[in-house]
Length: 299
Image (cartoon, rainbow, N blue to C red; front, side):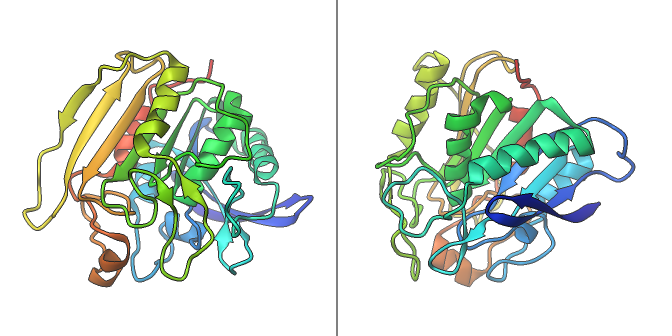
C-alpha cells in the first residue's frame, strides 16, 4: 500500500511516500528511510514510475515480503533544476538549499508517532546524492538510526560537516567502474550534471566507519555465484565484525559495475548502461541491505 503525503517545514511543504504492507495498520513496523539520487524522485524508488526508461520494484517488493515500512521523501529542486539533497559536499554548486537534516529527522519523528514505526528499528538507505545525505544524517543525527546503507556514494573530499564521530553499522555497495562517483575518489560528474563536487575513495570511506566501530582490519569474504553469463560484472561481499546484532561494516563490491543498484531480475536498458555503467545481476541489493539491517537495533 502506497500513500502520498505532505509535510510542513520552514522551507515549505515537502512531499513523501509511505509504503507499508497490506493489513499492517496498527502494527509497529521497522522502517527504512529511502533517499533517491540527484535528479531522481520518490516515485522511482517506490516502484511507481520509471527513471530514464528503467523501473525498479526491489524496495516495494521487499516492503511487502518482509513486513517493512518504507519512508520515501522527495528532495528539493536545486539550481540545476533537478531534485537534490543537501549533503556534506562543500564544493557542490547544485545541492539542495534546504535544511534536509531538519526535515528528515522531523519526518522520522512524525512517522514514529503517527504511523507506528518502531523507534528502535529505523534505518536509512540512499543512492548517490541520497547516499551522501545518509552520511550527513549519520554525522548529525546518528543516534536516531539502528544502521545505515548507501549505494554509489562516498564521503566528501571537501566537507562542510563535522567528521563522523558516532559509530554505526554501515552497509555499502559500489561498482569499480562507476563513471559518476569514481571508486578511487575524485570529481563527481555526469553528462549534463556539473558542479557536483568531489568525493574520497570507497576504501577511505569504509575505513572511517570501520575505525569508528572499532572493527579489525581483517574481513570475511563471500563471492556471490555468477548467475547470468551475459552479466559483465562479478560481485563479492566483505564483512567486518562477526556479530550480526553488533556493530558491523559490510561492503558489496561490484567488479566492473557502474553507478547503479544490483538487481536479480531487473535489467537496465542498453542506453542507460552506456550512460551509468554495468549492473550486477547476481544479487538483489534491497534484500541484501535488509538482511544486514534486520538484526540491528538502536541501543
